[in-house]
Amino acid sequence: MAILVTGGAGYIGSHTVAELLARGKEVVVVDNLQQGHREAVIGGTLEVGDLRDADFMAEVFRKHKVEAVIHFAASSLVGVSMKEPGEYYHNNVYGTLCLLEAMHKAGVNNIVFSSTAATYGEPEQVPIKETDRTQPTNTYGETKLAMERMMHWYDVAHGVKYVSLRYFNAAGAHASGRIGEDHSPETHLIPLVLQVALGQREQISIFGGDYATPDGTCVRDYIHVSDLADAHLRALGRLLDGGESAVYNLGNGRGFSVREVIEVAREVTGHPIPSVLLDRRGGDPAVLVASADRARTELGWIPQQPELRDIIASAWQWHSAHPHGYRG
Ligand code: UFG
Image 1 (cartoon, helix red, strand yellow):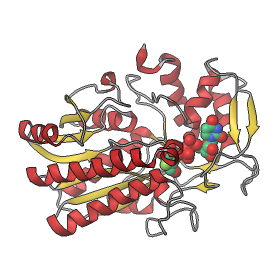
Image 2 (image 1 turned 90 degrees about the vertical axis):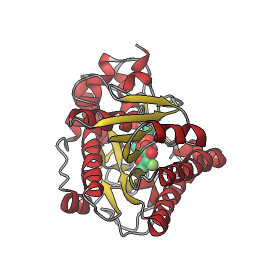
Image 3 (image 1 turned 180 degrees about the vertical axis):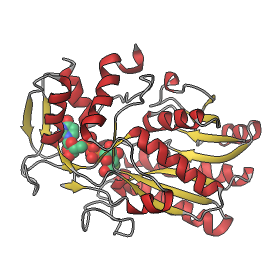
């Protein structure tokens, strides 16, 4: 029996595929390669196609004996989602609807879902708990919340069990050096900071220095991508053991400011990494830090690489060996 990974050629998907393969699982990846990279799929079977293509998905479920699905495939740029909401509803919400329908027809009833802290919006309190209010401040977070709710109603009607994992800020790369982060365009803080250290950009822009945080810049909870991958396998185990549907935050429970990230990157790379202070970026909450107590208690999930320095060093290992990502 195989685990079907949608978006398995993407950043977090490919690390989860690597973890599944390392534990001897049979893996089928479905990816339209719009954002994903063929080279990031280091094993298993890659089926290139789109979730919204019903015939393609029916064929995938016919060809492979699928035990459960891990669902990453989605558009994930907050800024673009605010300009092109239709694209986000179509790819994320309609794509998930098509996937759930295909699963239902094939009799597959377990799904682990790649969700986001963006479902919370501006937090009521930090650290954020799963029971806190969800009020997204951008279309991206809204579509991920809609996808979670859709799974809930498929559970009620058809007994499809889901575990939704709300990630905070994923970073770092696989210890093997074979896979890492390669987005186009790149918008995330850590890879952009490392591009400065590589001489690919002159300076890093700091988006806002007047937030109500100790140094005025936004605080985020950075989590190693391999720790995220491990959480997916634990969530999968819960479902295959007959567990009920659930939602978990995944973070380290510690926040670092933009300035702190840049400072640690200077230490790791030995590069001065010049910075320039700009205006705030729209839609950025001041502080996002997870309470991951539920994942620890119920999944036994304990991050193995919680130190920011180790996370950045791991990202640096990948970026310095692959300055142009998978393009060589
Ligand atoms: N930032 C800068 N300069 C940059 C890039 C980012 O100052 O050049 C700042 C941002 O304003 C933010 C912080 O660095 O305060 C982190 O920004 P990222 O873009 O790396 O990450 P986000 O926190 O915006 O977003 C991440 C995921 C989203 C997810 C969100 C949920 O990328 O998909 O976490 O919390 F929705």
